Amino acid sequence: MTITAPPSPQTESVVVVLHMKGCGHCKEYLPRVARMASKYPYVTAIAIGDDDARFEPLAEKYGAQYMPTTLVLHKPAGAKKWESAVDNGTLEGIFQLAAGGSRG
Image 1 (cartoon, one colour):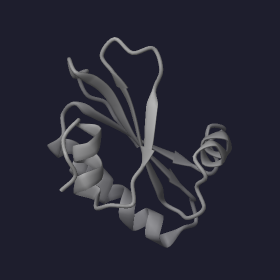
Image 2 (cartoon, helix red, strand yellow):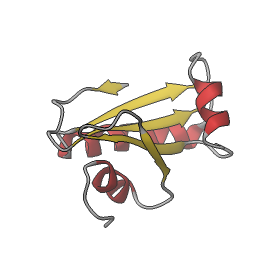
Image 3 (tube, helix red, strand yellow):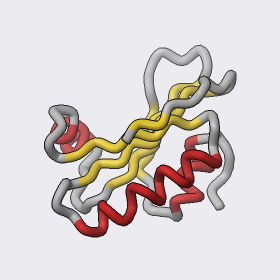
Image 4 (cartoon, one colour):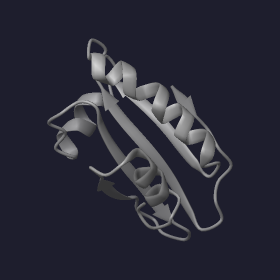
């Protein structure tokens, strides 16, 4: 699942969901992510499964121990590097954080 959106003038943000293909909870979570992404037009959401070459490096870099793991990656306007946050809050809060707002 990749949901693309127009870039925000303030920040580029990506919600990354790391998941395992055989994980029942992950299968229930991904459609909720897709619905939430539709509410936040300036946030891109990407699901990366354990069969994707990007999965292991990201899981290792961000210390993902449980699945699904949701990351918020963002790059403020004019910045050269991406910043990250691993959020254990609500799905709404994760998208608010990615959109540059406060957590709900």
